[in-house]
Image (cartoon, rainbow, N blue to C red):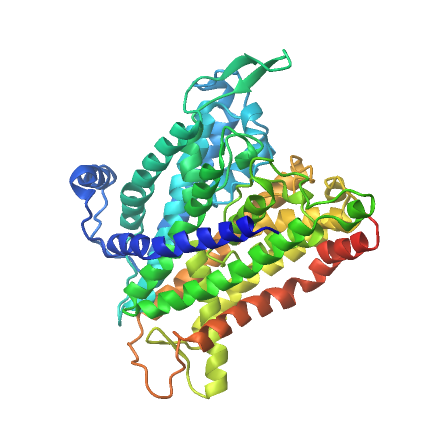
Length: 567
């Protein structure tokens, strides 16, 4: 570990905290439906969308109607993308002449991008046409991210409103987030990437001669535009198979720093937006504090393990940290920090191969996802997932103080607790259940490229990443098979929408409740005690649930490594 490495972590954290309030205020303006400086330019576009679709943005929806519209919209997008991928060979903007993808790969990819997971069982530059990248995939990067933020707004309204039966308008929330937040920021970031050397063209490839005199064909395409929303929307799907380790996606240390900020900035801003929505910004800062403490703990452990390196290699005289699977231009500190950022958020982007991390260094990204992607988490999904844990934490606090618990002025009763537990239980059931099936079937065991505990970790990581809607991979798993494409696709769909439905039911129930002002007997939800309780609930629920699987995978892998055995 070096001083420069810790300085990087400190600089990243500092800049992120400085951006939290401005981003939160921008989000709060969209949450309230207020005018922004972009309305004179984009307002006519917004109104045009409403006229074409016959939507009245002022018409409020109850939680059931909000849910149905959201599900129908996402199902339609899934079917559209499936058709584009299957018919790719007959569609335009296909300069390299790729044929349509197989049925199981199209199924997996369509669900993956609809669910904001962006798991990729394919190499983008060798499988997808420019049209498929732009129309079939990039469109989801915007709309799946906007869906997550819209859902967070709906839950915020549940906490903020008093004795109301509505939680907003799904179509208005989606449109405003896309037009006034995601699109303008992505234009600025894309221009920055282009200036930094990221391609943005409809050309298919270019032939070059290397320094060794060998001719090589380099794939090109509209990379910068996809890269911008891939990170800002915590999607993670790369234009190239190597993702953000590819120099055309992430050429410099500066672009790497901007990419990490892009992944976290909306998630941190939503915490401040929540505080504004409920009329107490201390609520938002408390949630952000708990998130950042969990994040920094993970970053410290991962950086420590990667800097320590492999003791087996040390015994052979190979000194230094673990550079296997990492880009020299980034090194250990930037690679370790990126791995923690991308798995603390629901973003599958990688700038190093997680399968090549040390056992415990790779366990932290895995554990981040098993916590439910709530350590900042995906755009929208992180904050509403964390609020589900907050409901569970305030219930525990209520048991301790002996009264009905309250959170942000709303009494948390049996219905909310049951729905929160139902939503939180989805990930363990899917991750552990599907991993168990893959670990005992021939089709599942044909996937891992390594044996022993590391091979088990590859299977566990895949289903964790899918169910948590992250999309990163250990890369040691041959996942482009009918078995894994099908199983991972189902895991992604359940992991996204089986959490959303009970969450929206909670939002609808809370909106109908009266406001209960805090009293001397109320458990405070803004101070250090509350932050500690939140961290404890998140860590204990994740730890108790997944510790046995971690013991069979990365922990056993680490103990074997300490004993001189590698897998």
